[in-house]
Structures are given as C-alpha cells and as structure tokens.
Length: 259
Image: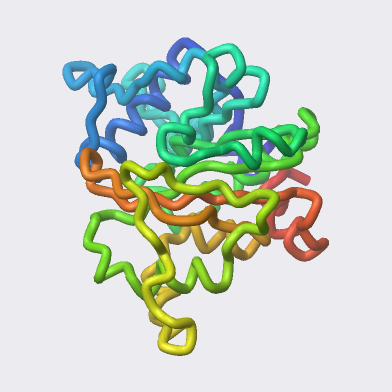
C-alpha cells in the first residue's frame, strides 16, 4: 500500500484522527457539496458519520504535507465492509437501496465499497489510482471475490439522465446470477430509451468518472436505479467480479500500487 509519491501514504483506520479526518472529508463532499444529511451527522464538528462506521475499515490516503491537527490530512477514502463485518451489524449498507439476495446466495466472498471520495483539490490526479492500488492489496489479502456498492448521479431529474441510464442498462446490466434489484419503494427503471437511439459518446460524457472507471474494469450495474430524494441523488449499484477481470483490466486496477 505504498504510493510512489513520498508525499502520500495509504493506511487503514477504524478510529482516532484518521477516522475523524475521513469523516471530515466525507462531510465536505457529502454534506457541503451534495447537500446530504443523516441522523448521526455532526454539523458542529463537520463530521459525516453513520452507524456502519464502527464495523468498517477505512482505507485513507494521507497527504503528509497537510496538517493532521486540523483533520485535513486525509484527502481520499474508501469505506470497506466485509461479509463478516456485515454479519455483525446484520446487513450491508447497500441493502437499504437494493435487494442483495443474488450476491448473498452466491457463496462468494463479498466486499462492499462505500463513502468513496477524493478531496476536490486532488481530483483528476493520482489520488484515485493510489486508492485503487491500496484496494487491490486489500482484496488480495482478504481473498475478496465480489466488489459492490452504490454510486450516484447528482440530482433526480430522470428525463435528463434517461440516455445515460439506458446505456448502462443495455450495455452493462449484470448477469442473472449477480443481478441485484433496486428496492421497490424507490425503484426507477433504466431501460428508458431503445439502444439504437442512444448517443453513446454523449451518454458516456454524462456518466460520473467513478462509474466509468468500474465499467472499464469489467463492472456491471444492477437492475433499476434507486431515487434518493433525501440526498438528491439517483443511485446505481455497481458489481465487479474480480475473477472476470482481464490482464489489461487488472493492470489498470493495480497501477496505483507502489513499485
């Protein structure tokens, strides 16, 4: 988990200043940028928290040039919830939006990815590649077979998202054995346009970078989007079977690792 740039370091955090700094980064992105909220969000301390945090590993990217005393030293984070830790809390976070029965019945070793954010000043650089490198090490060390988690489009204007959602449905729908489905209370069908009417380059431009990255790795999406009006997002569930990644895809996934 050693980035090539000595300015950065990757490590796992469950508590202490690293966790608080991760929650501070989450607050800047999730609350201040996207307008989200939650029962355990601490607005006074500017910490975005929830009941899953104590059960998760947080993979944090630390910029050693930033002041840790002000909790600004964490510039990237992935929240990781394993099958074993999900059993302790009784569910995965994603289950509030998607029926995960196909994954739970698969017998595969699962890892849920959540709360993945990079500080605004570090987007477009190497930060996400470093996080991917650390994630690759974590997956290898723990024998993870399936990665999954929710990714969001900002806003809930479905006509504006119709072309992109349709492209995801027609080109990247998960196979039956892994096809989770958005829960009925907020279900939004994604096959909104015939495939031959989609302007693919335009649809891809409108797709968030994180979603495109997982599609390039061979990822799939579940059936249906989940409309989250409380957080003003339209969510899709991403699923990645590590066994199906090609050598080229694995190189993309691991090139943030040191060496």
